[in-house]
Image (cartoon, rainbow, N blue to C red; front, side, top):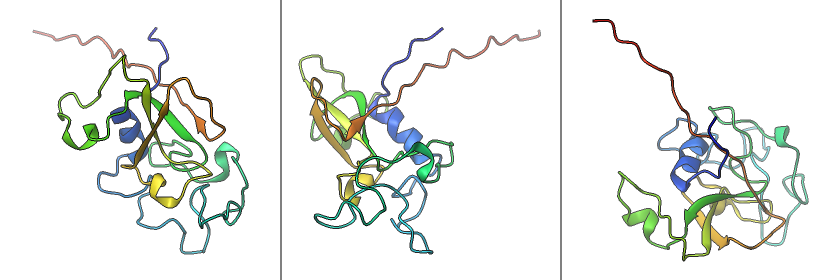
Length: 157
């Protein structure tokens, strides 16, 4: 059985996109408010205003809709740790074959997704930030992943 681990930055973004390649947010649209006037995530909508979206801090998991992969809160609520070491330019200049930077000397780790204390920019699936790995914050959480071991293929000759 594969072990649980933090996702890489690339895995996290793939999951956050929910199969939508060119969308700004996990829900697919270019907006942070629905056509009915409801916020689509838990974040800080205006400077100094933490409650306009209906929550002062974190909210329950099912408070907002899931993305197309059935994952909740891939934007907003809490930022999420990844196992990827932070380098300011690695996201833009890394190889597409092996995009994740793992540097044991670098104690800064990438966080993704934005949180209840962040402005809308950090909700974008391509937005990234960092925090030191030994830091605990009320606005950073995590979700775990497992490697998929697959199934054995039998080829009839």
